[in-house]
Amino acid sequence: MNRNFRYTGWRIMKNTRQLMLAAAVVSMLVGTSALAAPMVVSATQDAAMQSYFTLDFGFPGGASSAQVADTTFELEVDPSAGSARFLSYTQNVAPLSLPGGVSTGDITVEIVASLGGTFDRTTGEFTTNDVYAVHFTGDLSPFGIESPFILPSSSTATVQFVSVNEGTTIQEWRGAGLLGGMVFAYECTVNGSFTSSNTSAYVAATEPANGAVDARQPHAMYDAAQTQGWDSIVVGFNAAPTTAVTPDDLLVTEWGSDGVAPTITGIDVLADDTVRINLDQPIAPGAWTTFTHLDSGTSVCIGSLPGDVNGDGTTDPADILGVIDCINGAAGHSCELPRADADRSGDLSPEDILVVVDLLNGAGAFDAWMGATLGQSPCAGG
Image 1 (cartoon, one colour):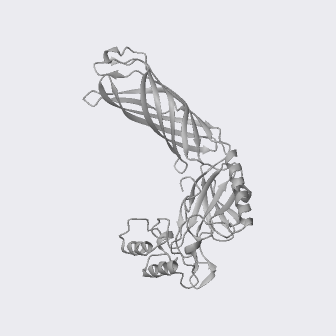
Image 2 (tube, rainbow, N blue to C red):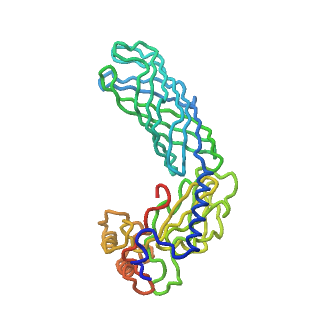
Image 3 (cartoon, one colour):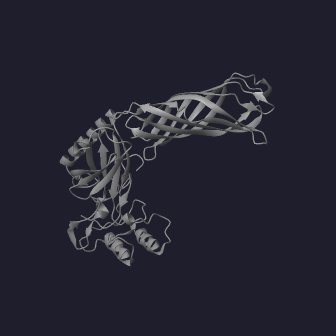
């Protein structure tokens, strides 16, 4: 069947058996997701490292810094959904000197409303948007300020795991406000350590990366039996798993193809926190393949769409121009080999232009990929 008709978004399952299989897979994924609850990170300030709070009024002598005495917070992080939000936050800061020598007195900072934010499981960085209440013990009536002072702020921080439930944090929150009719900027840097409710390592990074798409030829041009493509994936966890990773710890599913998802044939341990998952066949062309770590519920999706050189999710004549631009160094899109090296030779050459033309038109043993689409990745961030 011509792929012009077979690919118009998500592929339509063609018989009852496939529909039943899809329903079963969805059921398994829903069950997995329900088991993978967000983890709570409970952090305290590291007394061995200095942390500071600074106010800057933008004129000579206007900046004032004070040491942060202690900070405690609880943060809810969901590596699977890529979200984060503070559940609580309390911080005590030494007095700051305001313009005119007015002392703030001891300062207590707490979150009164957490608006949530994002979590990047690859880097461990999270960003939240919150509303803080800043309590002063000093008399700030000369500035027309009553305690508590309400301060919206964005916080950026990084959590680094040393085990599945312990690690360190580096937090920075900054912004601007109006204090006594004067505009000010503020910064706060806090170094801490944490324990978490996490009981399993989660998938942090992979190679190919989450959302990566292989746009090269899916087999030799005149021999469809010589299948080519990604037949393994390297998985890096946020920390060393407490037990060895086995095929039973992973679920491989395929979205959008008439074929069957690859089977895991073995797992190679590359480092304490890194494994390579080997498959019995390359991932299917024209589909997303999902690898889900069952204990943590974290997933990664990699796809294959032969001919999609420019990465716009559709194969069309623009991809011919895309590979020409890549060869000439004039492309405004990714020219990484998994996209532009259409013939899988290991480098870019005019031969790749001819292969893209053949992929679009269905020359040789190739199916015609003109107008094929891959659809949105089933994985968050992919």
